[in-house]
Image 1 (cartoon, one colour):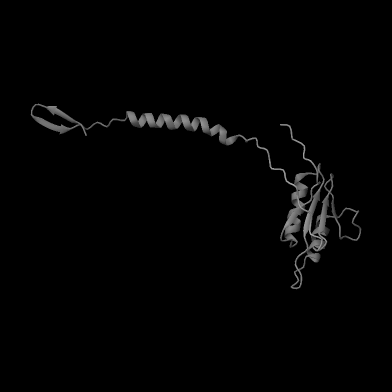
Image 2 (spheres, helix red, strand yellow; image 1 turned 90 degrees about the vertical axis):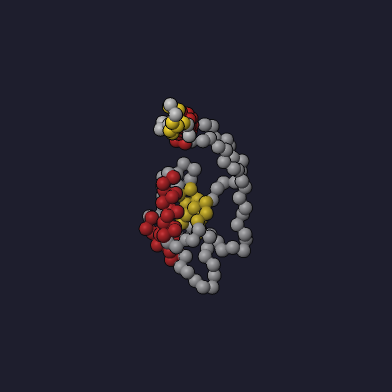
Length: 151
């Protein structure tokens, strides 16, 4: 605290030095002005590439739901697996197949989506499977070398 001297008396100075406060605020303003645009833009990354292991041979045959490029659903356990089925039929057939039983574990459930299929249709199929009682849903991919995506 600073003191002002007048003739024979010492009293405290009542002014606050705000210059250091202003310096700190300006530095923070500059930092936020620089970092804010970085938070709103995407960051380019290389996703990891891995090889998936094959299913064990002693495991039950999985339920495979296929979504083609037009967004049609196919089920490998349907009466006619090569004919498209509706979302309601898919949900009904899967729920019947996945009814809980105490003697055995649940069959694996896999989704095989066409490369050019609408992403929303694949997610819709996964949602239908979850509602039908699938505890976990896997995705089937084509093994092989992954090409780099240009961007």
